[in-house]
Image 1 (cartoon, rainbow, N blue to C red):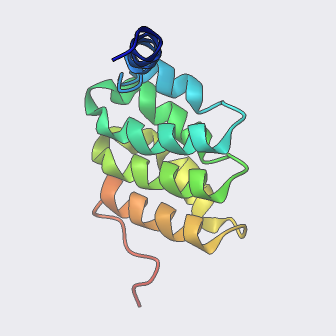
Image 2 (image 1 turned 30 degrees about the vertical axis):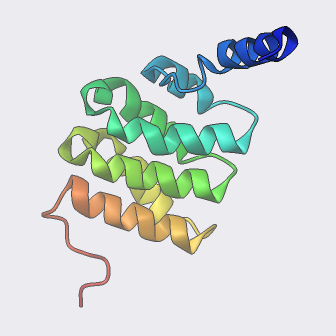
Length: 127
């Protein structure tokens, strides 16, 4: 291999050495406020895997229910539901989201999240 090719290869390897680095919970929480929709969606979908950090994540996901992007709001509701009883504080925000007329997908995700957080709740679809 010629020297310039080795140099380019080495630079590429160095540049990508941080590519697979997993973001910390703090970095993901910061990404929830990022201007890029992609960053917010990745954060809101990754944070629920961090169950040990529920005390920090649940309030952030409650705030994410207000995001301008429907996909972020749906993912926030789903994420809150994944925390189960640890997300009790999200019940008022999810109830408000459930009654919101903005997006049927968000309302349905909020409904499912509420049933996961408090399984004793009567389903709004029950007759």
